[in-house]
Length: 391
Image (cartoon, rainbow, N blue to C red; front, side):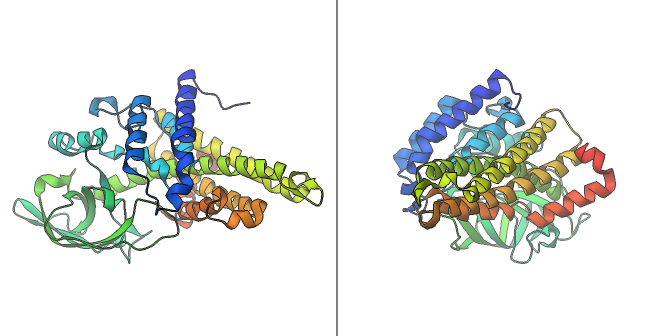
């Protein structure tokens, strides 16, 4: 029995799957051996194909030029993107959905619509060396000076800075009626005082790098403030909710790919006169993986649908955390088992299991660690009870 969805939902999912199978997966090993990069003409072809399919800006409404997909449909597309390694699925760009209804008219025209059209690209400068899970511990500051704000601080793990021309900077307000509260700003990459420090090396092989940046009294117009002073943390929470759900979806895609690949190998690999798929040890690993994938998929799909239905935002927050927690932990278990099924081959970089083994590890960390997700879930349990969250 398949999950109930409309014909339109299935068509969107199937189009995304064909795109991944035809345009992305064939380039995985090439990307792995070249720092995650593909030739510019290949990427250009992929982006053109996405536009043809109606996947140019899947998480943006049509009134700003987006594709207008529901949250459930976005999860279906992102799940398929999760089936490919080396972040090649990131060619399916997801812009700042939280900005809709938040950006003012000028910011929509100057920044949001160009992002949707693919003419500009953004990244987030939030995390600091001493402020990761505890976002409120950030030390970066924003000081009002006439018609400008002066931004100062060091930021780490600024994902995709090498591809971006806009940076969303989060800092604490220094002085004024909202001193100590958070504010979010749009910073053009070429602003004086914004200094690239370095790109640390990470476990995965992605073309999108994770920069360390220094903001040395970077001046931006007051019009670059997003929303009002003190609103910054709310926007970050909205971004976290969305990204946590999409991480869950991509983890489901990764697990499905791993199960398919490991199953096919187990049916072909012969040891001691039998295909290893006949041995109980292999059967149990595959059976556990498939069962856990089904559970994670059900959680992810239902969370996306309840967002479309307008569920209370606190319930959304808890369920996005639950989906991200379970799906990311599940994908890591599945990847570990897949390496074991492949044996020595599973330790080779040209093998899909090896790449996913490294790549899905971060899904238990970014956009809130598994431990932070558990804290969020427990807090909502205390406030609302089990029936409200799992009834």
